[in-house]
Every structure is written in C-alpha cells, then in structure tokens.
Length: 130
Image 1 (spheres, rainbow, N blue to C red):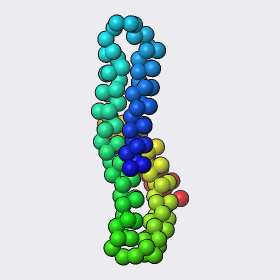
Image 2 (cartoon, helix red, strand yellow; image 1 turned 45 degrees about the vertical axis):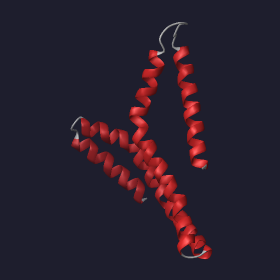
Image 3 (cartoon, helix red, strand yellow; image 1 turned 120 degrees about the vertical axis):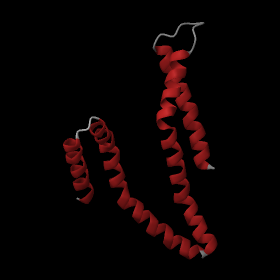
Image 4 (cartoon, one colour; image 1 turned 45 degrees about the horizontal axis):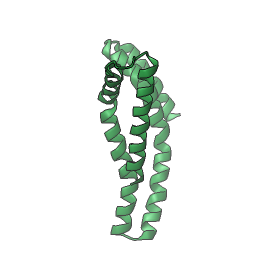
C-alpha cells in the first residue's frame, strides 16, 4: 500500500510539474494544451517500462520476506531479511554504475562504435569490481 500511495503522489506531482512547464513555455489562455500533453506522453513512452519494472522490483524486496515468514517462521524471516539487505548493499554500486554508463553505452552501440563501447564497458566493469 505505501508503494501505491507513493506512486500516486509521484504521478500527481509529475502532472502538476508538467503543467507548470507548459505554462512557462508560453501557452496562452484558450490555446490547446498540446505541448504539455505531448511532453507528458513522451515522458511515459520513455519511462513506462522502467516504472513497471521498478514497481515489481520493490514489491519483490518486501514480499519475499513476508513469504519466508509465512512458510517458515518469524526468526527465519528476520535472518532472511538481514541476508537479503546485505545483498542489496552489494548490488547498489553496480546498479549505479550501470545507470551511469548505460546511456553512453547505448549511444556508442547505436553509432556502431564498438571500440568506444568496449572501453566504456571495461571501465564500468572495473568500477564495479573495485
């Protein structure tokens, strides 16, 4: 329920922000709200899949503990929670690096620059291992 509430609040804030941006870009009274609607649609075309994936990822983080508690015991759920949080602690830097190099890697591969993509990939791998 907290995730759903946070998602609804985020969408409401996003809509308000997009509308403010549309007004600042000079939309006049009585004029169609086209730029705002187009910006909103462009944003969700880009991020809809990522939003769904992030929602399911967060749900798995919390639901797996409930499942372990239901199938085993509350003590087992506590041990599982601690172990899984340490795992997330280790994977967080790797996610940060992949988020940082992802757009660059995608751009290089789109331009068919395999040498540049290889250098970025190796640098990212080095950062993760260090």
